[in-house]
Image (tube, rainbow, N blue to C red; front, side, top):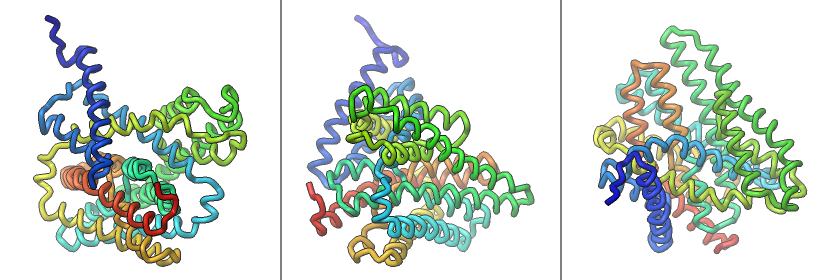
Length: 398
């Protein structure tokens, strides 16, 4: 009898196949419950992961980072594809005010709360900046799953796209200030964020401009899957090589292509057929990688972080929506829709922990433990927000 060990191709293939099939069942279940697909997939991952039944072999979990990068690239590409000049002209005021307020207010509130309740100012400031980020993958998945294509859903994706840009700017500013408070040189951090943001946008444009005119020629008017994936992965590989944001690079490339490729009937139709599979793997493996020991150690400081970020997103989005002149229902529900937090925040936490090792334990423990809560609970509020606003408006309801 053939017995497969966890390092064999048999175990790897059986695990991936099982995750996809059971993930499909989980996605179907989400249509019949109040829980969104992202939350159920995370919980399914927890069940079969190391904290649960421990059914996933280590060769699969070790591939989580590359799967996460590939997923984030496709998410960035698809969100960029929503940023058409027409949609931005219609919603630019709303998107700009909301994205700025929904980033700055939680950063200030979390930083202030943690500082008042005894954390040193440098740590409180760094955690405040990290609190600004929103998980684009979860928001995109919930929007796609909902089937709604109204004004609120479109604006939400644009807000999330800009949200992470403002979060990176705030984080770079916070890193520079903390470095100064610690008596270190800090000019390099501003140069670093300039390179990360500017470099990623330039890279996205350099790939996106020629791609807009070259793609969609083999199959007239419709880019093929090989074209779309090839562009996304080349963009991601170069972004990681040059140490710029691969999310923003992919987002920029998607925005450039959708606005310049006039001969395309629909530039991102091909990639949407495979992106959902990567998102499924991403959330299941993310759930399997969660360590609930960190959640148990969250303590009162972690509780303050979670409450401060939640209140900051709600207050910031409400203020931004009011300044933008949005209706009362959208003002009420935009904040809850922006609660998910994951990859970008953890990336910031790792950077801060490496730069300031004296704060490593506090930063990583708070961010990783709170991410577990925000990734499980956040998509529930995103889905509820979309349904409440879109159903009320009757705007392209499914």
